Figure 1: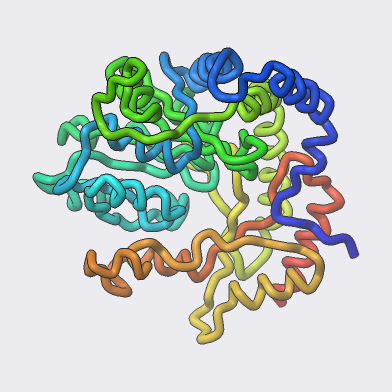
Figure 2: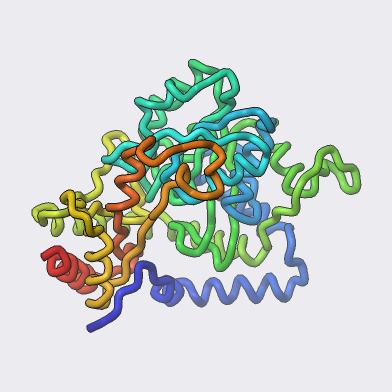
Length: 375
């Protein structure tokens, strides 16, 4: 029995290892490890790929969100609408600037923000909406931008899991006012460490993000605001330049794997497979199924996951406790049952192994183990 991890970077490294090694050695020999042409070149290439005028590299996807919020002058007393079914950074950064995250439930078919519920959450204090293109699946940005324009709200796209995803032919990160990306190693475009980027076609926003990421200075030793140190290392920028050239190939491989998963799992009872939204292109950062609870007292998803593990298939749960029920947000006053779809999904979702090099043989092993685990 061969063990199958949820994500495997070793095969990717075999493909690009020589290119990466040469690029890293060139940076090390240069003696310039912060900033410089590797970072600037990557910023230009990434902005061109996304379809924006500006790309600003930073230290992480979390910092990208923080810098985006700061660039829009959102602060204490303001509210930002977002989803509770996401990584904590989406809401954490709202809290970090003194604003309040307002959680809206999700759609069970896409796991993304339920746009039918967004308008009811808007108040006089609402300043922005952060849609999360979860698992690589884009939000309906046409409808979301209509809502935002109606109420004069900023839209910050959380694209951490969706680099290359599209809505109506436009890449995510180019549709809202700001796009925020993570280059954590497991992302579709992943560095060999932390990294992130902000994308925008608004020169004022771009200028402020650049200022804030560099200690709040437009020019050396003249500080305009309290900023942060959030720079992307030259080594990571050089690696990301190489990986960016392969991204579309890897995303196409993910699509083929997702299509095959769906074909093999379509007739399997007891689960619900993910459905691609009409008008969008998913890049399948995760292939996430629902293990239907069937009304049992025992969590069926956790039982299935353990049986998969026993058969050499590792899976992941994103996210076992939605943010509105996390201890850190207890003071916001959300109660169990208040956002029922998010709470139900937290009990049912299971992400199967997904990476571009996943072989048909491995996929067959996963599907066989899943069918057996559902018995």
